[in-house]
Length: 532
Image (cartoon, rainbow, N blue to C red):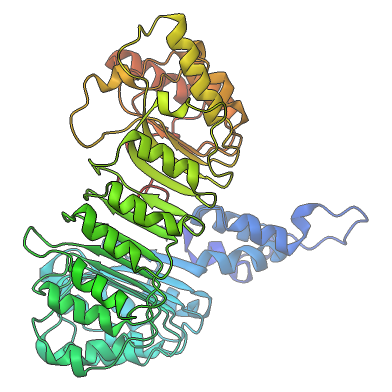
């Protein structure tokens, strides 16, 4: 969302129809060789990449440019809690142009929720910063949802310990086009459990993050079925034992994707009950699982995999995934596209190599330690040609002298294997791993020209490059990376183990105009969903 600033939304600046005539450039007759910016579709395309300030400037160039850029300026509006501009009357004036509205609810800006006539409003995101403001600041929200019930397609509420009223659940239930409902930190009272379930009946995407649900049984067994839900995320559900969560999951009989994360250390994923449900034909469309933060044994995971009707995405980090589960997974090798097995201590390097070797449809793969000797056991590395994301710790071992010709030859051979992944967009060559690992910085693949890094120049699609702290890059190494990967938008912050040397490299990147590329952690857009 674009952040709003007063100078960006001054009526006289953004609307040439209210500006002095001298500020308007009259349209010129089209020439035989029209400039690309004379085409409205080109201007609109460019506008999607501009800030609110840039859009405001472009909207003042001419009437033609105003027609292209002015609607984009008001299409995506985000109002922080300390913002008093644009004013409510100004927003009301341009209400038909607003497609997405996000606001931090507090006493000073709760009047924004009195907006009416946003006939194209499809996304609404509201959150409060504290429990103190949750009730008072959200008072107008039910009416706003009701007002835009015919256009809203995505609704996200993030309010700390906020307990929505029956009126709000009923307003959400009337949103005839609602597809996505995301609820953070809300509380559902026992008397509102039925209205809450009714409000969820239309949506296909339902995300419940840190909610508090009543420990009731009857509404889950006699309440409405949520047959429209396909993508279900249950993140740290409070006050609901595994049996209650299982009943809730059974209401969503048509889910294709399930994400689950436990709350605290007491509530565990009901893996055996879910396996029994799959065996009995429940969730016949389920093909993607993401389970995080629970101890699950290898045999239990294998049973779950065996009864999955189809497997496209499997993400089970910090679990007991091992050889038994791997054997059960083989029947799904022709359909699997995503695998995340980070911090699974029973997953060995040969098993990782086997997965990469055997799955032709793989597009995303994340795991721990893969030894260079396993990578180099074949003349070529037969990874999936579709692989776009690869996150590993490539272990070069500690038995060889890192200054020896043998070690350099091994690194070059590993670079040769990586260079075969021509559509790769995200590459991580070292990371924290489960279990003890002696001298991880010394064992990591060295991203240096002297080590043969130039062999990666075929990865022209690369957008992100990540590595464990402990690299010893020189300025020419960093410069080569920036020049060789034109699409690179993010790489690890720690390019050298020496603090002063790393600071010098950061200064060089700033001088080259590339300081925005380095980041201390993975981008949320492409990192593991559970945050690496």
